[in-house]
Length: 191
Image (cartoon, rainbow, N blue to C red):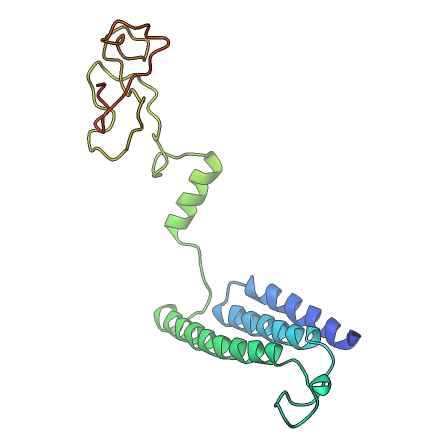
């Protein structure tokens, strides 16, 4: 298979210019960038589809002379998706123009605050803050009062023998606590 070098370079130029425009602050420029990238990818599909041939209609020509219909179908699908995306982004640009007489996308205060917290590695407002308790639980305190966590047999969640070692009391059957396996029901209590 030989590839047309001119079309391959055109694909690169379209995608490169499109990516540059997508990174712009204006909505219309970003839309133009999306259109250029879409056209570049569509052209890439056609370049990579192989040699040109006759229309892929069974019975009109030999199978060896037909072109591959799959890239053509994918390009048609991409054109429809690009048309829908164009309509959506044009509606966004129109609404932005109505509200601020500009299509420029500015950073908002909340975005700047979140960026500063990320730079400082501050997780105080995050859902991930405080996921692991660093303080030991009091004897008999349920670590999961809502019952959201499940436990497996052998899990012991609190120190119920008040020794502070983080291990439950000795086995009630008199066996060695180091070798016996404690069991837990779904509330985390030893049985």
